[in-house]
Image 1 (cartoon, rainbow, N blue to C red):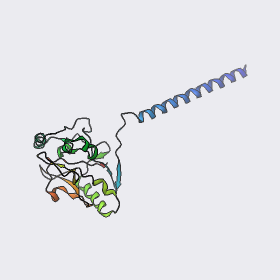
Image 2 (image 1 turned 45 degrees about the horizontal axis):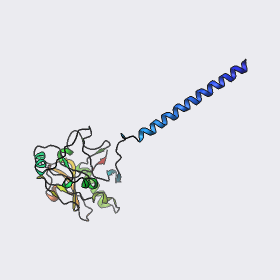
Image 3 (image 1 turned 135 degrees about the horizontal axis):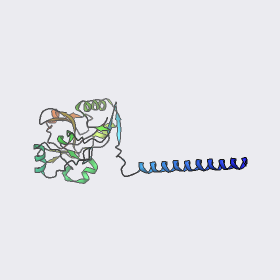
Image 4 (image 1 turned 90 degrees about the vertical axis):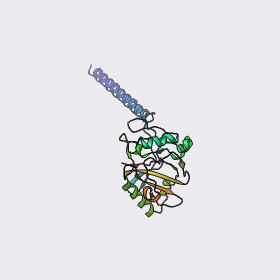
Length: 217
């Protein structure tokens, strides 16, 4: 009788162990499936420069972090109107989606400064001080990291005209100067220098369409 009870206990324990292991395997498979689901956050390519970590590519998004849409603006009249009304707007260079795939979108400063935040989670749009820091690192360095700022995505001027694709690029900072002007950086030619957009070119109007590059929080 004792032997029979002992055998019964062994069988019951074995059943519990096998069942438990089966549950663990099932949970692990589910977790693996979730990681590859369509809801997975976008992973952005990044590069360390000094103490900062920068996105390799310009932003190419059309929504704020809370899911609200950033308005796409195509015509010159609509672009100028959005700037005058201090409303956020984005466009593709020449309204050509192929340019977006290569260079990202162009945004006015009102999209950059919107309280809904257009930077992806874990990132932020750099201040003028952060641009100054990365500019120093690039000038002091002889590595190839400057190539991430040699994608010449061009500008959209306040009146809506597109200029300088493949020749020049400009990026916004979050730092404003006056009611109508903000700071940014531009890059052109073979120079490694990131010039101050407002002082160097005289272009700092918040109505401009410029690229946006983010830095890690």
